[in-house]
Length: 468
Image (cartoon, rainbow, N blue to C red):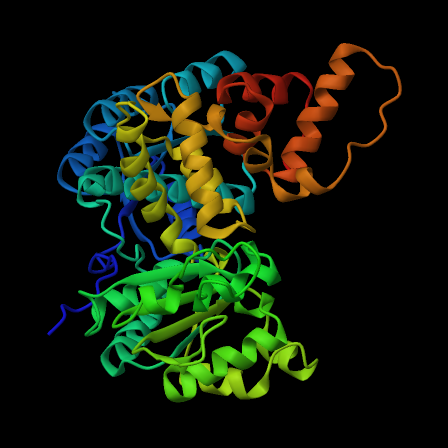
């Protein structure tokens, strides 16, 4: 009996982390807690009236975000920020003050604060800032978890994922493997169709027999027939000996026909005969050869449309689709991107001779925002590129292609025309544009502009740029 197919599973759902509001004014504390609770994200909100009470809470609870007043009796918000970053480095801190100066804000951001808001604040802006801080905390937490687990990912040929799409794919693979039938796999280029075919083979009764793969689109029409069926000596000019084809090589095992839609209609007819009675004639032969082969075919084009256009034989389609498997594109399973990124990091860093401990939160966020038109193959290639380019112990955003760093709107639209202006006007223009494109996400805007958050905050104040 073959072992049950495995895909990476999501950990059991835990209680959400706390959002801690620290404010000595009970009315203001209640207002902030009410605003935070209106978030669409699942949150546990707690309050503390001073920094010492907050420090004790942080020591005994998982806190995702601390929203704290800057000026409080005794220890102030800056003291609390320093404590949080030394005891729970992953916790994000948002400082709020009615007596803020540019110098105080810059100092707080340099000390690790996520953002700095002035009283009176807009409640929607406060909620957005807390939600973004929570998103960053959750992403960083997942990043750390994946870094700890990367040693589990081996060059095993396993399907990596924890999404429902991958779980469904695994069930279909199990069913196909158990019944030793013809299989038709459909999916976009780079989505992993050959990996799925190999999994069907490895889980079935033919696992100890050959797995032979051929890309029908990569071989000219006048050669593919001889590759599949072989030929006899004298069958054509240059045939000075007998040659076995891939069907013979796969006898007892599995033959994977990738991009079968590229096969000519004449070749499709010969494939149909093999599937019907398990026999074929090598080129130049007068007696048939019988084989026992499981055929798995794949295409990256909608096969039903090809059948309707008479570009693919209907009888061959129905013969192959005893078991049909659709491989989901990577954009349909975004929760698997981080798992795959770490898998490829572990796979290729050793091969490329790099000792890399992980992926920065900023880089991982950029990977997860990308739509991946090239699917898993594109992700693997980009991780290899990052490994080659990095000069540090982790993959960071500076190693990513520009197309992955900028938001989608910035990638697809040209810059507005700028007439000659002063340098300050040009700088203010680009800050406003970037904040507009990132929907007010200052952390992402700072990454795109190539400056740190404290510098961006100072320039926003200097140019009096309103929140988007």
